[in-house]
Image (cartoon, rainbow, N blue to C red; front, side, top):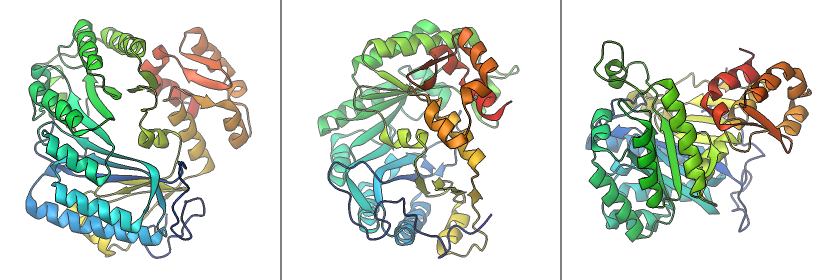
Length: 409
């Protein structure tokens, strides 16, 4: 372990602009991924365990001041690196007033270099982002991608999940964003909800596809320890999840349907029309460097991985430099190889076997021949064009397969 936030942090030569802040040439798609965590919500969803807190003006003003300081500090330490993508996630970033978002974007422009083709995403909830003037304001600041938290087209589902919006609000928000001029909108959905059946899920996907969003994220409901919905779906609770077999059909049939209407299944839970994959998320899966700012955000710069403290008082001390033990994890060659397998197999492209052999010094297929042969026989993996890929059935049990291949479990 070692210091990561002190003055001894080196600028990595691999970073564009590390030595002078020059912008990359037009058309270049190089640079750093930047994530900004906004830890505020109007209310907590019943399935959520991410770090967030209630929005209030005093705490937000505190957060904003420290975030602007953090932007300045990292811009200086990394010598104004170029940004390939910027992603505001949460929490609920759309709770930030437009004038404050403008402050943040101007600070980023001052302390980082913007790639001319930079993808700039903001997550928004329909209850806090619902009129065209708001979306026009986002566009004027340089936001060019919107991720809208739809989650379901059924009001009862939204109520069970504790979402603070209705279906009508979602549709109005989507239409307002379109009227404002957003040409790259992603809609987030959750499947495998309590009481949900295959037909209801397929009907919902059909309606969503008819809205023609550029991107669809479809996540399987995950019950996390400590979340209120987990208790309601337990043996003592009042809600029942779909059976595993039905959830499997939801995933496979849903993915096949979305592909049939023009959405590329480019990652386990993500689908996009041609040219509209999330470049920010794709960067994570490709193993690119990323910098996370804001409470609880995680970064990986080269072999160094570190996290920002999640509570505001600790975050304040962290940015001010009052913390004396800002530790990072030093990733080993073995760590990076395991992550290469884990991240690559989540994507439609799969694992580049030649690149793996170059980095590992051995042939994965030969070393894991009995396992890969068995997986292929069960139609869970396939090898084509030098890549090992999961089939849709394989994606259903991707966690198990990845643990076996990457970790030998």
